[in-house]
Amino acid sequence: MASDTTDKLVVPSLQAHTGQGLGTGNPADAFVVEPARTRTARTPRRTRTNFEMLAWLFMRLSGVVLVFLILGHLIIMLVLDGGVSKINFAFVAGRWASPFWQGWDLLMLWLAMLHGANGMRTVINDYAEKDSTRLWLKTLMGAAAVFTVLLGTLVIFTFDPNI
Image 1: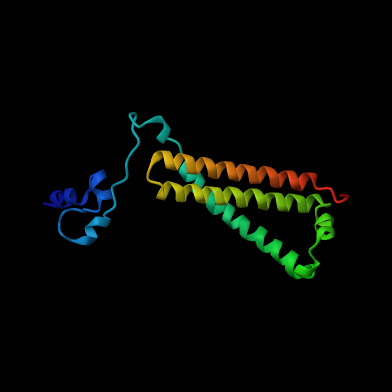
Image 2: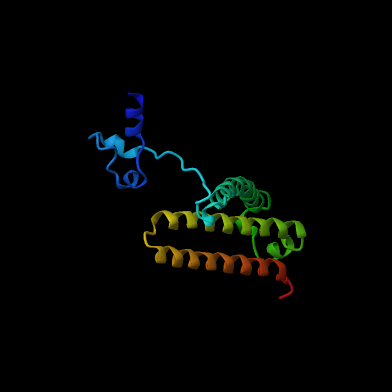
């Protein structure tokens, strides 16, 4: 008797995504979660990686680091150094004369862009229905992220206050 009930709770893969539920007439049955799939020798090789888990972990860790970097940046720039009115070319030149501040700003740039690009990749995966649309959107997003990181890194390391 218990196995009959258990068999009714296991939703086939396609049925869980159609919103048809278990066919019992209860609308809440449409939200039944599929049982976890196990990897077998027949699982395609490309699905055996832990990329999504690593991307998820990166988002959590980079988010925590970014909170400290950005709050420190805002406190230093807006509170301790006299506010927005004091920020000008000479202020930036003096700040980037120190390798510490170059490293701080570089780390903030890289983490923010990688964190944002990874978040956009997740949004694209969730909302782009066609594979070709998903490919092009992720390609454009990746190109924009790489361009911004490279340009920002170039500016930080080649900044010349004597211009």
